[in-house]
Image (cartoon, rainbow, N blue to C red; front, side, top):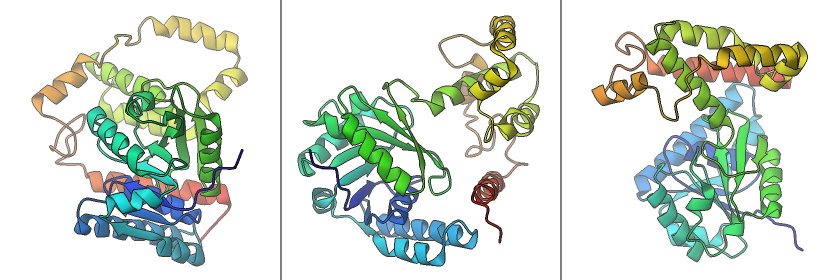
Length: 317
């Protein structure tokens, strides 16, 4: 059986994730074309990828030579059919809408080479369902890049019910060569792996506010200065094993009865959305964004990620 060879990628989507995904693949040496419906949007996607590449260089996370080579491998296009036909890897990074994704994958399935791998960047939807109308679902899988994709090491590879193990392994090896830290999720379940863990934390946080136990700022302070600070070096299951499962079990048994356990979002969370308090984009959510800046929050996040990645690689400016 021939090895799967990746020679050219098509990345569908120019929004939050597409440019960073294209940059990641280009840093691994794979020519990547960002596809959009308009030339203006495609050009904007390329410029965003270039800006991200320059940020990696200025932060010491990539050499000038690596960045120059990657930038030369990134192009933008509106020629959907022609680009998909010659791609050995197609990555979709569109809206989280099942009908949209099913229609898109059915179209890509007809256009792409029979050897091409088709991937979705969905953060939680079933890849089995997304591939339902594809004639070769064994070559369809999820590659969930975490945001921001040019900085976050994690990529979750999710196998659908019919995804070939060989395809998943080939994609895993490709992502390793691109400098990422991929994991393979064995079962196609809502939320994949990381978001299942994150959703448990999010809904408990909303419930804590509703119960009057603590406010939003104190909850985030606990996460940022407590469990979240040590997790990059000390996983939750490592913590349980190190402290002892007998102690861990006793604590879980005692606390679990008071946790939010309903199979839906807490009512407080739902009330915010019903009121139109959708967060930074509307000026109010868990926080009052008239006195807080989303731009500053993202900048702080990105600088922290840069510092952590440089420390991991032993680099200083």
